[in-house]
Every structure is written in C-alpha cells, then in structure tokens.
Length: 152
Image (cartoon, rainbow, N blue to C red):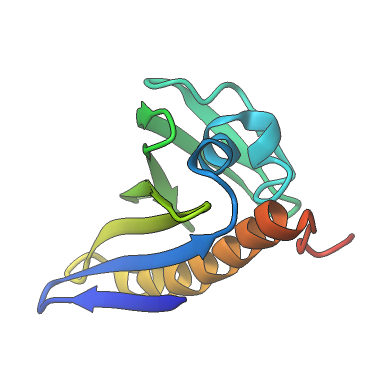
C-alpha cells in the first residue's frame, strides 16, 4: 500500500492507491450502491447514487452532500462533495478501479485544495487522514467482511 499527497506551490491533491482482493465489480458496488456504501463508510445514505443525483451521507456527527458526476461500472466512480465547516470548498473525488490478478487496484484522487482559499490546507490535511481511514475501512469490508467503524 502506498499513500502519497502531491503538491504544487498553490494547489494540493490527495492521491492514494490500494490493492484489494475483491474483484472490480464488488469494489465498484461498494462505492455506487447506497446499501453497500453504508456498510463501510457513512452510517446511512439518504438518496440514490445515480449520475447527476445529490444524496446525503450521514454520520453520527455530521451530514455531507455527495453529488455523483460519473459512474462507469466496474471502472470508475466520480463525485463532488464539500469540506466543513462552511462548505465553501468543494472537491472532486475520482475512484479508478482496475483488475489486478484475482482482485483489483483502486486509485483515489481528491482535490483540488487551492492553498489561497481560507481553510484549504486544513481540509487537505483532513482529507489525507480521512481517506487513509476510509480506504482501510473499505479494505476491511471487502477483503475480510469486517466493519472497522467505531461502535457507538
């Protein structure tokens, strides 16, 4: 597993990749099916995850809208979402999935985080930590059928 954040003078991106034992169909479904997504990421999804739809991801401490931009079955899932606290910064997350042996290779990219915007560096740091945790939860769900989310 690799974790990398690319930087430039004025913009930050989050880029990570993971190798998963699950086939591309199952990895895609974990992102694109509201019931599957709620098994490892938010507690629940209000709305659908079709292209052009805006749904709400619900956690105990927050609600975040999520707008699906692109969904190519078993290959790519793209969405836009805001960063707290004021939601003025909206990034685009791209999940690319490729077959790799009997499993898959997932590449995640989220950004841009423009440093000239107030709060962007904090959002970028939060994204690094949050995506690392989310991808660990995804892997636990897909490869081991384990839910790593904290119990309340």
